[in-house]
Image: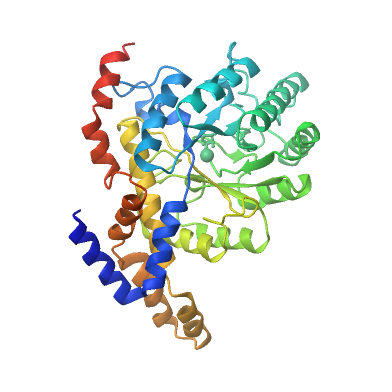
Length: 408
Ligand code: PSV
Ligand code: MN
């Protein structure tokens, strides 16, 4: 995009949406931050390509951070890296290691990064009969211990965010007592909560399915909401876009959680068939979600108590992982820019006048039709960042370097 293209694009947008909204959209893009997951860069695939790793994949948490640093250098938006305890912060594969956490924290710092949210890992060996909701007390105790350690790591080395996702559930009706497992889970969460520093926010993630499941322990936002509410102020809900049934109205869930003053986090990704594997694609659903976030003042809010926690949670088997991250950040920025352009005052007038189609068209003029590439490019220019981060990556030589150096 040349300067002339940007100027022309901005003029068109200013004409339709007004100077002020375009200016605010540029500022919003400059302020938006999103965490990226360590696991995208490493040996975690999934589904059909579980055994396939792209050339040059990161072999350790340190190499994952090297890759994350490139993504941050090119986007300026991703200084925090989400980590998983048993993938990244362990010495024995079973427990969290404070020493490793401290080393990783120091290395991240050297690279201009921070450790972001900490996820305890409940789904490796030993949890096939459930984790926090297991009926064997020694299993529950082991996972509680790991979660408390993760909370300490979040407090000392991270951004004071603990993200909890449980693989617990059942494969067949009758396999478990649905009510009883919920009660066991509640007790375990309470035990954890008592040991977590109140400065740490526990975000509870829900997921309606896992391949082959009949039930998952926290299937929906309502269950996550109840659990978070019961725990208290330092607990919230984590919305992962890939964890819903198709055609669920996720933006309405977002609006409801905002109305209920629930602190939340987001795991962004795109789902085409199932699960949370694909990188973030620009699409109308994502733009509508951003509209609710903007209208609810929970995105690019300079008050950290109000600004929700934004993360990308994505990892599919085949694509270049660094490309996927750059593409995801780019998509999110474009969807935020669209949401910033909606003329909310006019929308309220149309809603009050019951102008159903006109309201819908006004909404879509920003969320579907607006070409916001000039806004994102201008924001990058103003931050001295490359206007096309993916092209800058291709030109950087990093990919050739990691393919050369990271032999397995
Ligand atoms: C589970 O599908 C999930 O969304 C959770 O957030 C995990 O922490 C992450 O993916 C990685 O498995
Ligand atoms: Mn997730």
